[in-house]
Image 1: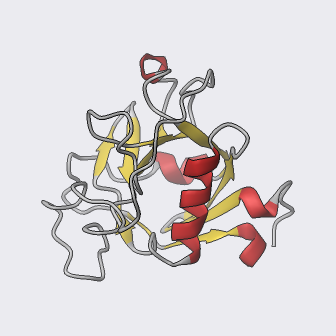
Image 2: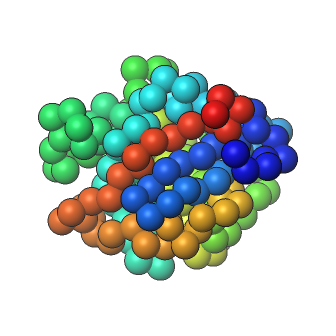
Image 3: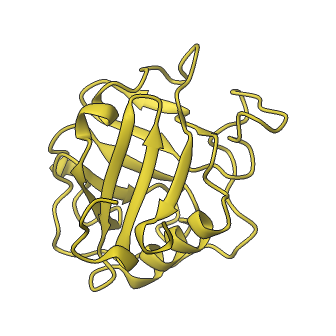
Length: 168
């Protein structure tokens, strides 16, 4: 196992091309960080599609209700759901949406984030103060960069597994 600074707050996301390590930021966004760990530990993110991937912008995934590519998957519905858990209040901070940061996806309501998230391909500072930043990729960004593009992608990539490093 890799040597993680804080295994309890590190996510190991396995993609087809390899592992992506994500440092969660519980000091900045404790509710969002806890939610990601809860869903990862329950195996809810496994096989979930990247349903919205925009070149130069971001890769969005995390629809645990409609995005599981092994469970009655319909790409047309992916991105419309969340988990059975309640929505989360916004945890806006001064952290910028830089390349490799994890942002909470939501509807127009700032307090509607649930299970979906996105990884920024570039510095997307126009999102600052509008979407919760709660993690950052610390290694494996090249695998994120290789995710198939599309809204939705014709043949979407998926998160094969998502684990909390402390549990591995």
